[in-house]
Length: 394
Ligand code: PLP
Image: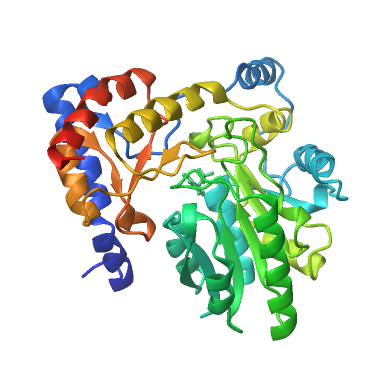
């Protein structure tokens, strides 16, 4: 074997995701792209907002001397200040540029934070279902993922969470609005969670960090607001990106923001900047930093996502699927009508419907629909969902 046994093992566990992708390609070649209903990828189909294109044009027309050079590993001061100003305005907390580290997307940011915090064997709690990359990111830095089930409607179960905390618990990762369920955690729940982590940290003589992974924070529906975790515990770290809210996933731009009163903030911030460099990112993409500095209040067209959510949610519910109505992100996570979610995903393929089994998110018995695809494909898919429901006898 040429590659490591560990990576070979990870590849074999995830091989059905690759198979799903290959199946999509095969079906598209046979039936044409408009007759294959591929709900597997979280790759936004919308364009970035007009303001992004405007800023890009301005910068291209008036390049800043030295704009392609290396910079401070934390990113441009101007960009970090722009992010901090918005955070201060939204939370009332004294954020400044020093609390912000620009990163290579949220994925890069999560790796930088975990690298900075974890010693070998440290535990990181995640709530099922969860973005499965957390498992690999924690492993990258010697950490171990501990899965804790969520309660009704995929909300955190704080009793289960409390039981899972040990002296080795270094952090809890939450993700709201959530991938794959689309649910949002309310202020009451976050307040309880913050209190719990502070209490357990005190009891154990440790710091348990609340890591909030928030790339979907601006993709919310029905006028709901996502409460900021910074209000609920000072040992909180937010990681986000503009992959979804500005539809820039290929540009790899995001940031880490650290609560101004976090434990040992100087050392932590120094560690984050060091890890951003030594993980090989060096710094976040320069051009994107210049642009997003001017776009902190911008976002993609949320109404278009909400229309897609409503189309699919209403149709699935009318067919008898059991679905928690998502309030954000661009995913639905219905219960699988068959006990085996892999078998369900295979059956759906018969109708050219491609979905990801819940097993891929640490929760078998469900499946994920990603609806960041064209409205036309969603409309084309509705009769196929009806036929699938009929075959299942829903
Ligand atoms: N976290 C969650 C929950 C995600 O769904 C994703 C991407 O889909 C990421 C992190 C990674 O985002 P980025 O593209 O900014 O690295």
